Image (cartoon, rainbow, N blue to C red):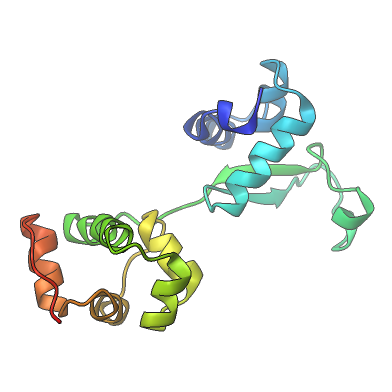
Length: 168
């Protein structure tokens, strides 16, 4: 079994269920389902890094201190994971985020290359493409320009879902 074999949405659903109902957390449930403890930890850490889960310290157990992770004291016993709260994107915002990722890939650009062209932060671009952040007008304009479009042309093509030739 590999980390990719565990569906992301399943782990997020487990964390959401714990957040709403209490009971066993995502890590405990995964282990109960037969996932090895190290793999369950790796999956949850991966989803935390991707921004799909956030973590906090259980109020039932004392906080072991900020350097606890390095000493191996932060374990599933005193941490809990919860789904991150993401903004509800409107249809235009959602379409913009989809188009951003599609157009970047179509032009053969990496996120780093788009960052260098646009001046928009790497994490911001990544979060926009995964719809984890609401795009600001400033970021929309910078990213559209970096992809060779004017903002109006990029937005019209986004909303209409019709092809538009990049400005050269």
